[in-house]
Image (tube, rainbow over all chains, first blue to last red):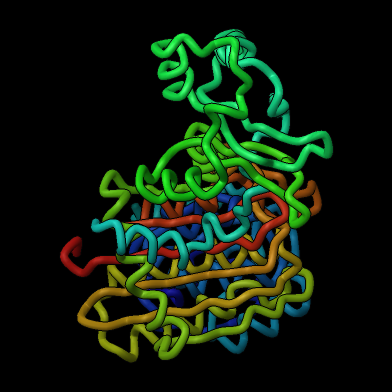
Length: 110
Length: 299
């Protein structure tokens, strides 16, 4: 599945449109950055409620393909700028991280 | 590891660099006057469980030392009622003995010759043990790790392959150095898995500098022959208890930091999990040095 596929399937606001052709192979849900960096696998879709610039650094470090910011939260402006630079796609979902995770799971991500 | 290598490792690690006689010695010193009786020395040694007593003059200036062996000699000769002055070792003899026997009981004197303390081998040992509270070596091959740490020192001073000065205000550019390291390792053609491990650990160490050490430090790496060595250093305030800091979930980060998803107490545990060798040198009020080694053969 590609980032494009996730964007279309979730049908939520696109905060940053990055590389839409990147492959998404797995998913991870967590707000503790150390856990994400240690356990999320490259190519993951990451569901979180964190909104600050450091999530972009974590995503870049792990090789996250797409970030879904949950609970109707929006990113801080420097996070947006950084994501644009990294060509990292960011979505805003009003759902909880639990619901977003369920949807990603239903799309076949494991 | 040879004695010479051990000495080099210790010197490099800076473990005992702050050791001087005054930090090692016992200051509660029992001393005798030259006119005191040998019998008094024997009683003192027995009651205080000590193996030697310094002899000082009226101004507390060291004039010699009487040891257990001298007491035994005096006992054998029936000279217990003599003054200790007749059996104690002169300073010259004492120094010669220390040189000859390597270990013993060292009186510590000021420039004017005044006795201010004593150093026995047990004092040295307990000072060393105390200092090891500030060293964490994650490896059963502890000596090997310290050995390699020492051997690498010059490489890092003169020719690190990757150098990044950590200058982080708040947490804004936290992780920039490790992102740079990751790109550097990719350019060198390292395998994906070793790059992942090295950059995750570098990230955690860099974040620690940003959270705990005022964002000032350095991140350096040597990447050769399929092996990666990463060293992250800062200027303090240091880790008071490294054993606690190694525990998952233990953190001194503030609530504001935690709200951002940092400070979960997973930094050092993650580093331990992903590195093959880990050396952390720190202490309260001291700089922190974290060196991580990533071996190729694990991939």
